[in-house]
Amino acid sequence: MHSMSNCSTSRVSEVQLFTDGACGGNPGPGGWAFILRHPASGKEKESAGAERETTNNRMEMTAVIRGLEALRRPTSVELLTDSVYVGKGITEWMPKWKSCGWRRKERGRLIDIKNEDLWRRLDALLRRHRVRFTHVRGHAGHAENERCDKLATAAYRKFVKKQWEEHLA
Image (tube, rainbow, N blue to C red; front, side, top):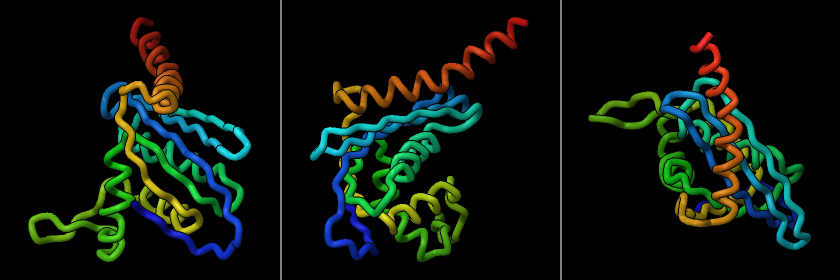
């Protein structure tokens, strides 16, 4: 469980953030998607996007970042994702990386971490919001995770179709 907050609001909204990333090849065209739900009101917002050349981990992270960026004020967030990479990054790895100047130890020496740009963006958002990570099993019938997967996959497929058409031309 990871919780970070510097906000001094007496009443913080609570939302659920469902996220997923998908990639057609790794690297390859990729998509991200999120669903934000405010359980108290039942309101939802969903969004998706894609990049022509990326990795699955970058899309998983981008989904979380975009979801947190969609919040207008400091919020208590339950992050529900199937990404162990994002979950461990938030709860275990990031504090160590930060203490080592955004580097990690490998074979007794410090090396650059992958996706540092996204980890730094995520770190800034984690300082604004209180985020609790909940792992959900991917492709196991979790309705919101399945919806995010469909949105993310549909988002990147436009690039796959375009590449295929260019290949045939």
